[in-house]
Length: 193
Image (cartoon, rainbow, N blue to C red):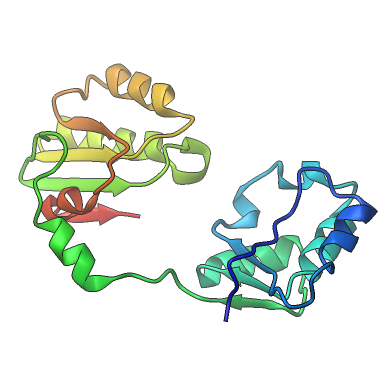
């Protein structure tokens, strides 16, 4: 169904880019949308106008969003390009179960209620600082709670600073990027998405 060639939006959209999209008609061009366009900014910086954004995505054979919310956000911001669909990320269940049985990459303090968040450390989109505020408040109220943040990203230092500000180093652990996040998830009482 899909050939190994991929087409993607280039950094600066020009008329020649549009022509490149139709160079080889045997190649299916698919754009994957992994985020909610209502919650991000800057994607339109590579285009002269929102009409150019709409036209660019219209040139793809399919625009595949990985969730219904991503599709709603795409259509609200970019508009209906008539080629949008949702296909949830595929998950190899047997492989995930096998990987979950391996030991975690680092030791994490696990209290009675252990929360785990796996993802990019990008506070404006993911809200990790707000989560740390909530966990710190619950801990200060006497709840036996802990949090592991698995992932890396642009706001890693900002999130480390928040942990220090809240004096949460004893119950909030920064695990960094992990090739295998599943052991951390296995240990969680609650996975925060």
